[in-house]
Every structure is written in structure tokens, then in C-alpha cells.
Length: 206
Image (cartoon, rainbow, N blue to C red; front, side, top):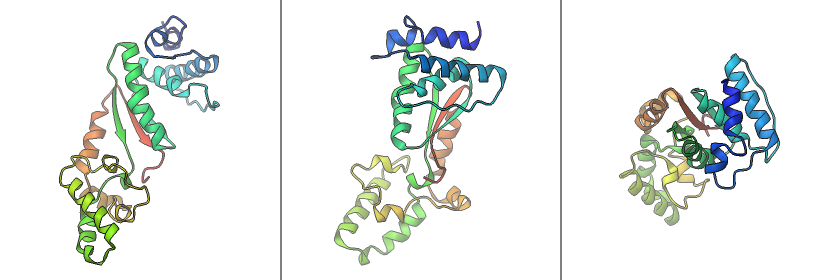
């Protein structure tokens, strides 16, 4: 049985996805796209595809990758979609197929605290306004406990908070290697062993 045949069987009306994923509805466009992705994997070809909203694109490319035992990099345009794929779609697919899926969640450098830059900012705390000092202390308390340095752990922190923008990872990659929570980032990358999926944001520095 070819990879395309296995993909079609998984997407069938009586297939494992329909029986496990709540509200699953096989769509002609999804089946067609998944078949093209599977064919591209099998033939070692490049595929450029475009599909409209509601096609079911995520499963259309995830399913062939998983069934084919491929190591792939999935780049998304938003962190919201990134979260959906990693926290919802990948676990749901693993449950439907009855097999674990190794995946790593990668983000750009500005999502991680730079200990060096944050230390420099703390030295200037006295010159900050009261509200800024409160956020600085919130970040400091979190920094003492976090194992990842990922800003997503801090609840209700504004995306454009100046204290974070001044404390995030360096744009210069060489300095980034030495200054932020690089150990965690490298562990995440190492965790995406073959076969695996790595889910990353659309821009390396975003």
C-alpha cells in the first residue's frame, strides 16, 4: 500500500480520524491536498500548493508526514496557529493513529528572556516609572523560577511591553548563543528526532 493509499484510508468516512477526532468532517479539498503531499513525499518532489480557508490544510500536510515517518519543519504565520497545531492538532492526530508523535515547539529569539540585557535594565530601575518598575519586578520574580525563559509563561503581559522588548533575545545570533536560555532552545531542537515534527513561528527572530 502506498503512502497516498494510507492517507486516503485515514481520511475515509469510516477511518481512524473520523472515529476519534470530535467534529471531524472529511473534505474533498483536504483529501486532494493530502494525496498530493503524500505523492510528493513518495516521489521526492517539491510541491507548492494553495488552499482556501476551511480546506483542512493542517491535517492535509500533517497526516502524510506522520504516516510517512518524515521529519518536517512547519512554519506558521502566527503564534495562534502555532499553538493550535502543537497543542491541539498534533495530539489529536496521535490519538487517532494510536501512535506517539515527537514534536518540538520552536519560537523566535524575541520570545525568550536575555539574562544579560535584563540585568542591564535592572541596573536602571531607579529611573523607571512606577508601572514600569512593577513589570520589571514581575519579570525578575519569574526569571528566578523559569526553566525556559519563554515569555508565554507570564500571564497578561502586553506584547509591546517596553521592559520585555529591551530584555528579549539579541538580534545578533552569536550573542544570542551565549546570553539567553539557549540550553532550553537546544533541548527543544534535539527533542525533534526522526521521525518528528518541529512547529516554528514564521520568522526566526519573531
